Length: 150
Image (tube, rainbow, N blue to C red; front, side, top):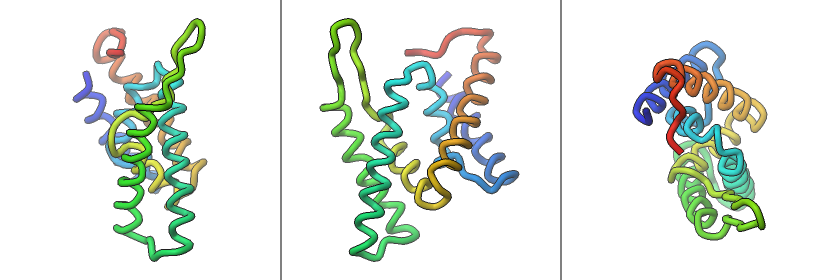
C-alpha cells in the first residue's frame, strides 16, 4: 500500500506540475501525506516544522547567499533537524488523548519548506492537499475500501 501511495503521488505531482505549473511540495510528498491524512495532529506537525524551516531559511538568506541548490540542501538539512526535534519533544500526553505534533519522514518538511519559498505557502499547501486526497482516494478504491495502515 505504501509503494502504491508513493507511486501515485509521483504521478499526481508530475501531472499537477505539467498542467498547472505548481509543484506539490516535492515529488514524493503527496504520497507520504496521503498516508497521514487520517492523523490531523501529524499533519499539523508536518506543516509546523515545514513553516519553521521556511522561516529559518528566510532569516538565513538575509545573511548568506541561499538560492538554488544551496537553498534546497539547507531546507532539507534544517527540516531534518526540526523533524527529529519534533519526534522527541512535540508529543503531548493530555488526559484523554496523546497529541503527536511530530513530522513524518526525514526530508518531507524540508521539501515542503523549499517549495513554500519558491511558489508561496498557499499555492503549495493547496496543490499538496489536492494531490494527497486524490492519492488517498485511489489507494482506497484500489484496495476495495481497506483503510490505510496506522
